[in-house]
Amino acid sequence: MRFLLLLLAILPLAAEESVRPGINEKFLDPELKVDDWLKRFEVESREVFDARQAVLDACGVKPGMHVADIGAGTGLYTRLFAEAVGPEGAVYAVEINPNFLTHIQARARQEKHRNIVTVLCPEDSVGLPPNSLDLAFICDVYHHFEYPISSMTSLHRAMKPGGRVIVIDFVRIEGESSDWVMGHVRAGEEVFRAEIEKSGFKFDARLDVPGLEENYCLRFIKPE
Image (cartoon, rainbow, N blue to C red; front, side, top):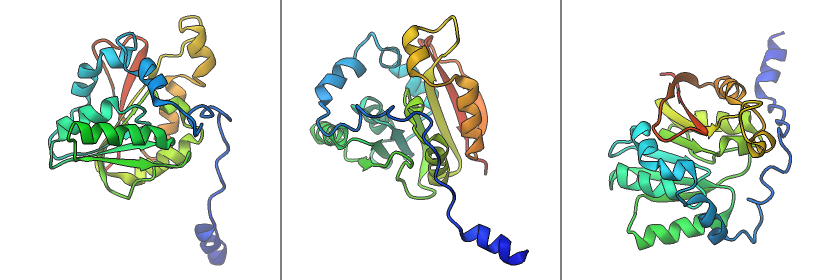
């Protein structure tokens, strides 16, 4: 029996099956054009762009913190975090497509943000070292996690004890949400919350962020 338990402890875990095959096909395209996504991500008609200051306030970022912008895209929040953490802090812009990271690096040089680190990650991990983060931010990205448990478990390892995770995603309610949300977002808030808790995080609060109506905002903590 003791041998069996030891064997189970050293065997690799079974690979997680994809929850939505192909969900990131367009974001994995090596020919991805960042300018096309700037026109979609950084416009006032996008709720999380219009409410960006309220979202930033809800995150509670402080100088000196180490923050990860998971699925950073065009770097909208990466830049806001870089200002907020100051020169003593660090912001990790995490993406699966290098074209986004090249754009973020260029903007960082242009705006003299020397505290931004770009990270190219696989689809099942955030690619960050253990105990390196005070805060992780996942905005309209969690529904794109093809391997959510694997990705969040890797994030759990990367968080410092007591570290916080902010998750913003689309409200998905049958009969209320748009056809686009119902077809694009694979599940609602309850399912996503359960997955994140299964990865080791403790649910802390559902935050009321002014300007967010199509999106909800959840805060989780890595227990001390």
